[in-house]
Length: 292
Image (cartoon, rainbow, N blue to C red; front, side, top):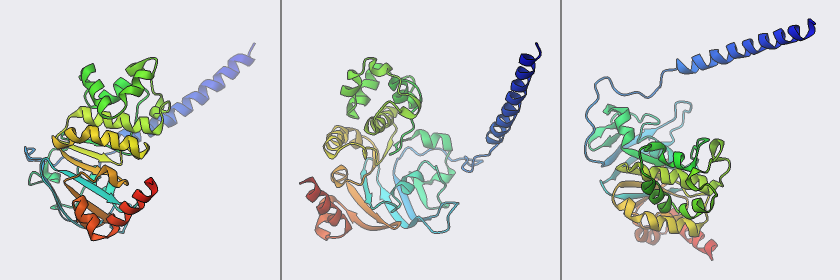
């Protein structure tokens, strides 16, 4: 008679102890103060989306060596900038500084002529849509994941964004279409499909600054070229930065920079860079030869 109550009591005590330990960890997390915050007296967000990097050198808080060194660069309003370089050259770090995912040094990064550190953080980030290489998807429907940044979007707008991202035909082939549940972190989708959901999400946000950070690395070159063709109209309407390890994704950009070990080693348009015969030209020739 007493065996089961004693076992149940032990189970409950164990459960309470585990719950208390979990609650301590949750409280510790909730009490953490963010390292990047809005300034006490923020300046108004400027209407211009012109971006300027002034002699920017940056190292992560956990490291000593700079990841970016002496970056001087202007991205004019409505311009498309292509960024290429070898792995570890600082491409992703460069664009993470724009929405202040990490804080750039004071006086080194400006939006519309105003230091980004002097702008209200929430409003700054609302002006930027970013599609990262490793997109985070929720255990929800494709519709909800695409509309995460704009939950009031209509179905027509969601379909248009999915079409531009080269995903709509595949969504239509699913039994539940847009209402397909993708599982935790999008486990039921392929890598390329997850990236294109992230791209559709960024397009749908309709922010004046669009950043594509090697967004299509998991799709083949032919599919990537088709999607980049779809996006030409979108890119022309916004200030855009396109990062890619494939030259085909950036060759039509207004201006291209080549990063190597955190420095801009070459810049120009596609033709100029090919003529120079530097790192860009070598990458281009290698990729052309591999493409056959």
